[in-house]
Length: 403
Image 1 (cartoon, one colour):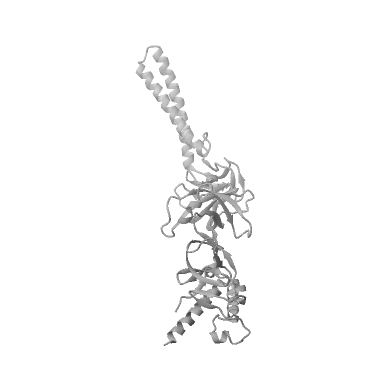
Image 2 (tube, helix red, strand yellow; image 1 turned 60 degrees about the horizontal axis):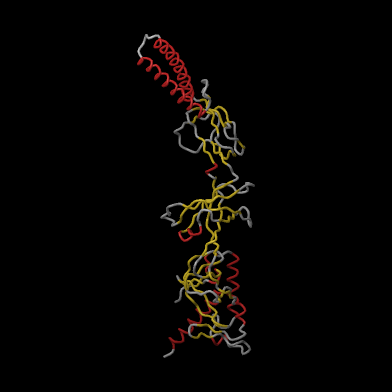
């Protein structure tokens, strides 16, 4: 028994595809030599002579009506092949900031909400933070110590000039003053990084370091926060006019996904619309489970139609040095083999085993078994395959019954 035959697109048949196959079955039932015995096919003298199998080829007589159903197309040399890859849109991390608390505290005021545009340095929320107050107090203490060290240095210099103290005492005072000044710089830099460097008010502002739009807010008034707490950032600010696209590519696609290469995106939310971008980086390791590699691209989004976490299809043009391209409808799956039907001459067809290098939704790349310019059946190839199978079974039955 021969393996069941499937066309390549039949792996993802839609309702329309099922109706098309039903129509093909009806057409096959009406044609001579397709699923009928020779006696039935020639029962009416007015019908044309049936096709015959000869040397592995199916030969149709001139003018046979089934020839009108078998559309053909020439295999073309592979140059550029459009390849569709699964992708996902995410925030551009080069234009995104996630804000966490530097000190423990309690939220007192929310000053920015989702969707709000903010400028760099703008406060998003205020915390009452005793820990930050301690840092402010340390700064004030360091400033007082510096003032005392400067006064001591002034007295020691006067005493040295009067010859009352030794030089080593003056040098010690100078070192103490320099140390006090360094401590003020350290403490002030710490408090200035997170808020005011003067005064002690325990008010810690959560500020954004970049301009953009608030796209996440994960805190509420009265909430206690800590620097070591797990969970999402308190705020996420980003520039949504530029997005990253994360592409799951196969090993064979890497040659066409170099930094700077163009990509075209399609998203289900906007049927028929395309968005262009370019590849920016490729990962250095392949996922051992999926055998895919992460490729990152950037997509301009000035009108902000695209949203983060949208699923997309990334189309890239792959340059192929060898092989030929044929429509996916020309490929018939016979068990584990891929078959095409080549038109050798008018009305003469033969099956040909081929090896595929890439399968796309509309076209496939044939690596071996087919030459550019050869005509292959791309319309009703499955009908022809079933006719080959039927005639082969009839021939085998006749040979078996012949003594």
